[in-house]
Length: 153
Image (cartoon, rainbow, N blue to C red; front, side, top):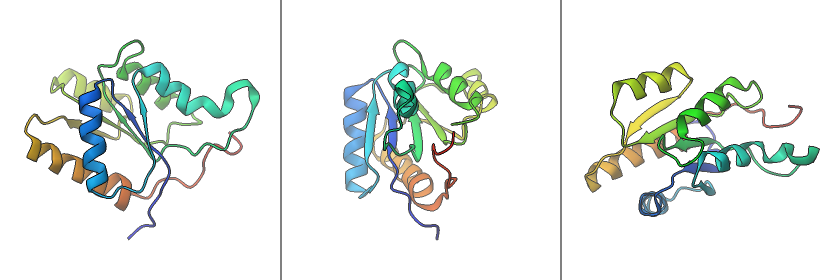
């Protein structure tokens, strides 16, 4: 089994209720990663690029994975996905879309623009728990992320 990464999990979710449920489920699943929340796309970009602000290096760890809602206010999840996956310095950060949209055009768009996964938010609480558990098991426990961080980028 791969060594567990405890880099932050970045959750882009504008719904307080959805975020609280996700956070509760992850606490129950004993997720060790610090969880950071961004409520819009601009905040996601700010979080990812914060070490570049004013040319200063900060001791911020790169997210181990970004759980991205598509329907965010302002800069939406589609734009965030496009921008991050086109940037050579951050494109290896896994981005898993977690949205209510089951529209085939959204799914195709996301994969064509570099999404590493696409999960449709289940309405049923048992199915939601299974979906979140599968996400945690793979992305936060089994997956081995790239070693390089922001250093030298």
